[in-house]
Length: 487
Image (cartoon, rainbow, N blue to C red; front, side, top):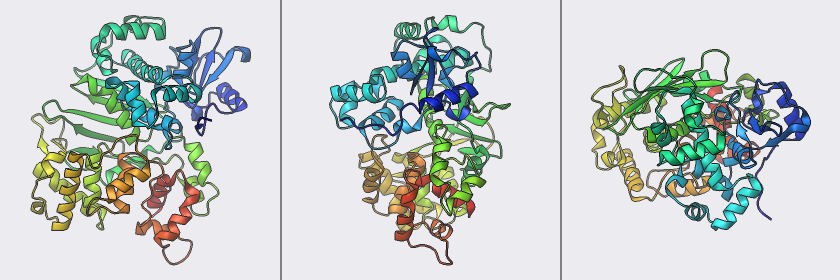
């Protein structure tokens, strides 16, 4: 019997109520298809509600398109938040979905994808049809075409660049695939020309409410890395590589009441756009389902009041795995402020300067593993042991002994990282939490966690906290953020 995902389409009565009330909390958790029009919609679609006998529900956009429905032009399914539930867990489909989201099928075959998750190609296809409602290639194509639809609607990018940005190597293939899925050509979707400053794009990144953007910014602001990123009370900005074609971006709340962030981005390489948006969705935890997470904590003696006080608290990720790993090592057994000081020195000493910084405070790129693998880190005041750990980690990444690949489980990730000299369980779980966005990562040895989670005068032991946190699975990383914030 194939292993089943934790959630498919919600109960029919829930779907009906969410559809009729246009409940944004269910946006992206399922889609409504109308048999009389052959169109599928988000739960928040403003169009007149169809008759119940004409409605079908699908758990994802790929399944709706595989059944012959096309995306609505009013509610725009390409803007719906992703369903993180599909990609959670260690089973083959979840790991394959994560790899598809990261673009593996752009350069590899279905058999390559199947091998990465430990099954055969035919078996993976059967699992996808059974659990997702569409084969892996269709999931991949739908993901790319929906992103292309957003670019066509919201930007002035030429169609040739949009085909590259959405992962198509041929404009002819892109036009054909887009026309099949949407029943109109890409040029016909763009009814009127759009204008924007040269090279600057503005995109919506939607989320399910509630969403505590201010709380997430506050976490990032205390850790903001001077020269690379800038965080204030309302926005996050950073520069990114490569050095010969650097770009920059800024995220802030979308004006008005729409449940979305506004991304402004300058990206000289269109082929990187989809990967960047995917990384930002993980970094800002835009695909989380806050209702499900809150339901896990609401009856807990410690976490229940914290969830009620801070609804919509999200898991703050990081832009780059190596950057997070370096900063995690720098922060071992010292304060956040001290770790930030060391990180700033490291960037000023070894970060590549930009020839034309986009704005003050954004003028350097974070150093690469090859640069730090042989750097004399004692120059910035690091102890010999801490410097050796950073260099050893950089070499391990270069050698492939550790990585940030999407298909590995939390246990596999931690086991590989703690095998490195100077990396313990706390550091490995912290990296998993922020670099991978793993919702169940849990640095149980953290003294603040052990203090705040205790209901008595003494901090819990690491063993006691680990046992206590079993009730918080599979969302222990969210418990960490709630407990840290309460402290």
